[in-house]
Image (cartoon, rainbow, N blue to C red):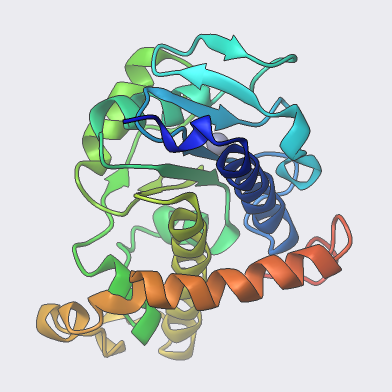
Length: 249
Ligand SMILES: [Zn+2]
């Protein structure tokens, strides 16, 4: 059976999704100069990846095609240096079709006060299996570090990276992007709850595992479609740098 992207309309649609996913990360304050989203070309070990610029500049016509060994298959330009995050997750997880890496401030704050992510609101149900932490600081610029991060992520939706950011991985790039937005929202709420509780994490009424599981549909295609419609439309109406001046935390 031919790959879905043999149809140029599908290729164009996936390229547009990748570019838009990157712009969403920047417009919504999950990343500014750094961060990136990618999508696997269906049925292959290759993926669309932006060139080495802010995700806010991502252009569907300038995406690179990389493989899981970090090689450039096609396209012109230099890839973002943390390409190994994407390459090695696609290598480890055949079912993953979209990977997002960003540096969202609330998630970084959680890692640096020793608080694991907890499910504290409904959308947090997307992370009912838990969000592991990758403790090693610094950028993921080698194949080996990419493998270590992929191993820490395991089969889960997201991993937090101490003092650095987050990575999400799901079957579609739209879902991975929505998950990144939900995780930052969840972390921001958790920080506010912690502050309101005077720093006493025990006062936060985090959902029980059973409650969190009951909300696991918060990353279902139906929910993702609705969230993507909003994020995509809003991102297209927001200027570059919209999130940097608002004091988003
Ligand atoms: Zn990074």
